[in-house]
Image (cartoon, rainbow, N blue to C red; front, side, top):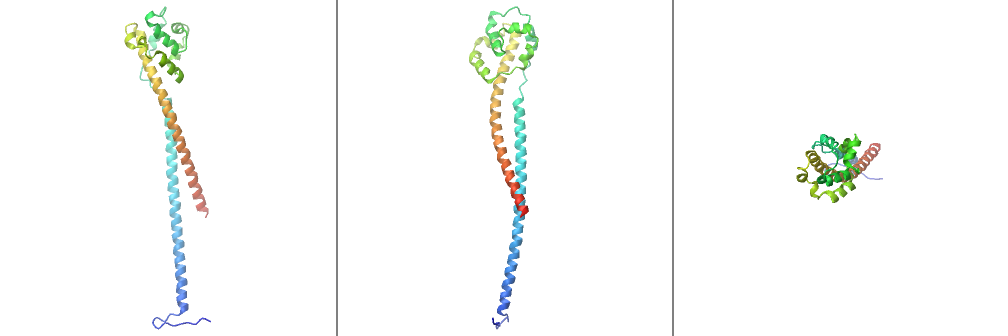
Length: 219
């Protein structure tokens, strides 16, 4: 049997002291529980904020990918296509000797054996030229074969024929545009690859956050 000891000053028994300890322990446990709930709420809030940020990042990446794909399809149309000059060539009986290299280059570019004859017999040939786009291999091959020839310079053709000169100006712009487009396409492909990697990482982060929130709400 436990004896009760009285203090000489405050009059507390041993049981009283034990009761105080019990109350203190329960109080501390209650505070810890409340703190745990508070920390949990804060953690859940952080998860949800991070989830929102990751979803915004995901949406931005998707938008960037869409814009890049659209940019890859756009072409420079600042140079006016010399439609009338091409039509005028239909009336030429034969290719002038001074322009044979120029027309040989046109044959090579637009895959025909006789450029003037193709203009005369094919009414859609000019439209085909207008919509034509070179493959990377064809562009490289043309640049190696023709790009340095003086007979293709605008200064050389300027005094040979006004129609050929207009076509020459367009041709130089066309080749420059094709080259820039190919370079841009390669850049876009690289950027798209990186964006898709970032998108995949972001989506995985979103999945992890959603799973944490789901588990937290269950518990």
